[in-house]
Length: 530
Image (cartoon, rainbow, N blue to C red; front, side, top):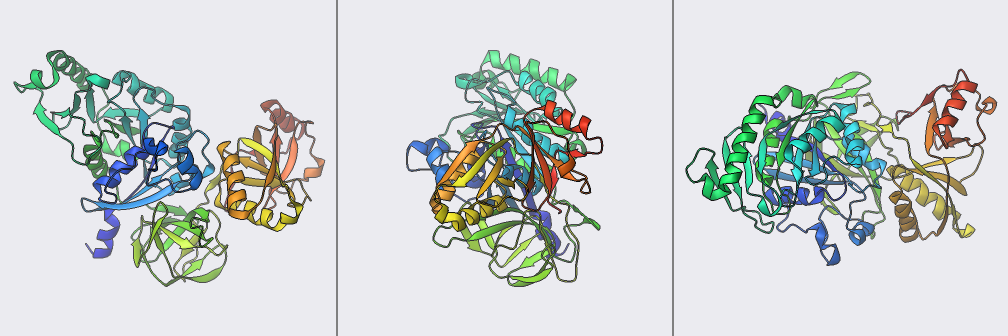
């Protein structure tokens, strides 16, 4: 195997998804701890102090102790080069989260052991299903009172519609948490709290050892024996092919805060995941070990560094080898470019890199030429990766600047933030940019928009909530929108690319539009190919 192929085979690129407070950021930090990327985990619980999570970099995130934007984190462990895409878990998250999942090869789903599957997890899970990406489940917080593990498995299967296969099995929970049983090794890993340090004090023993009663207690010994017998007889068998096709999720139990079960999970996860996968394009599948470079932009972030007022485009490398100062072709812009300062990102920390390979995520300086979903490849190649869907916003507001003298700053700020994908902006046909309709997936993005316009662009805004709950793209371009018969509570709008859309307050209004306009095609997703 060549060194080029070896570099690609070492790559593992995955997203971590969860509901708020399930412990996702804590788990991320413990993984970084094992990779030596950080020396001390900055617990999110430290939001009352000066400490904040390493993956949270925006000022508003540090103030609230939540993840608002997706971070990209890279570290090396056990011969692998690991790229973690840390997505926001807050219930008011943005479309940024959806897009980030498009750049991942697999996903780790973190579930709170006392709460089970929650609403946000369902949304993110649907995106994973769209892509058929493998999902690995880490049931967290076993050191606190938890639901029955059988109930938790049933919850995952019934709510998310995916089969489960527990790789280990918890012994008790909360104050009575004794450890886990590794089903493949047939070993008990006994739990000792260690305040989140890297090395975990643990005792390994077998179920039939004479000292088991002393280690976990006679009652737990009997209960574990019964439950393992039941699992072996009635549970789903482990099937790696089913896992890799997104139809079976391996389940691990542990506690990220106390660092119990994190390293065994990381070992198993790396064994089960695959190297970077081939990506679909308009000329077919592009293999990661192709002899040409290619990648796509899945995220744009302005003002990561206040001192420089810069814009960074995050690119997933899909094939080949990237080298500093190499010439590339920007397909959508139809021009050649030189990528001179590629960066590896660790939250807001950056490091200029000389090379990167398929599977890696790099940050490239964006003078304003890139859009979400753009393809970049070696000169001489010409193809487009399939566009990243534009997901429908769920909340809408009318936004205008307070001071009309700041029109330029308002238009620049709101346009740049929209290009990042955190918000979508719309206008009434023929209207200017002095007043726009802003659509977001989660209402927190309104706060982020207001905060960023004030702090990064010096613009105060007036925001008025709108009653619309649904948005649909008009699928047939040839239709004359002026002739549409719409209910009085519906509104015809356009996006910045000139695509026509309709806002609705209810499903009744959507049905009215379709019944009274027989040729009208309404779509729930837009497409960034356009």
